[in-house]
Length: 392
Image 1: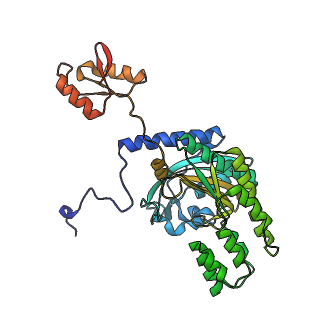
Image 2: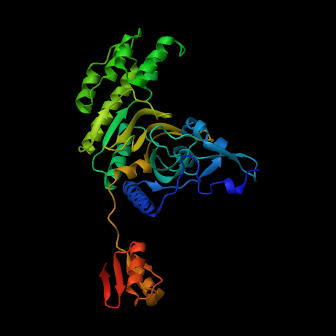
Image 3: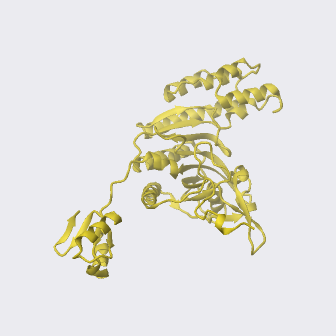
């Protein structure tokens, strides 16, 4: 038995941490701003539970792709296995195809909440994260994809992030380019996939594969989206699979629509990027800003699946609050009024009803030194006095 005296009762598991008042306030303001922005575009807020039955949460679709990174526990009441969500997209898909399955499409939903993962991603050490997202259920066109990408960019702009860029990709393109070739165990295919993962265009070009030169061209595509997307379409090899041509055509079309709606956003294309797009189909996108390592958010098209067997082609975006926090400017210190104990709760309530933030101390108003210490400790910016409110 472990002695209680040997346990550090303040120690938390790796990747978990407390959020203290100043950051909590900033988090709340950012969440409110982004969710309000989603609402302005017609997205209705839903809030699924933190835990669901394992076979429901990890069903085919978005949930299954994250099964290996999901905590599980047993429900002591039903004795059934539960899963603690590691991503909220699967839950929104379940709601859309079951509880809201009778509503006309497209269906616009938004959400925010905590997720917990077994392993953190390479960029963030946190295992408990806050996701903020929007899903356009029943989205079947490039203009639907562009809508979701645009509202994500607009919501981040409203949160105070002035320099944003978006990288567009086609996560399943490489699979399509190699679909008619040899088995996945073929050494050439494995080497080609590894070269793409490392973005090593020279290594890809050296491999004896019919699409090697085209893959090299995609890996070396300059970061000037509109001009190079158009040129890329002109330079497509004649033997390219028709599905690959269609995917690249959608990529160019999406870039054009987003650029027209958000001309201030820097757009780039990286057609073969697929890291993090475990369940996406069609075009995907990632959002970046200078000074923050990793994406602020990621999104794209996917197919929802639910236990009922119903499915919708959908487009969604997930924003990662922890990274958004790094990109948003510091908040101005809000006004807070200190009042001495002898003014009483009646005055305190009146101040808050008038729209002020106020805190009551323990010292009497005739002990100015004690009041000063309490006001500083409380982070107050003003004093309440019999003559009115005075700046400290």
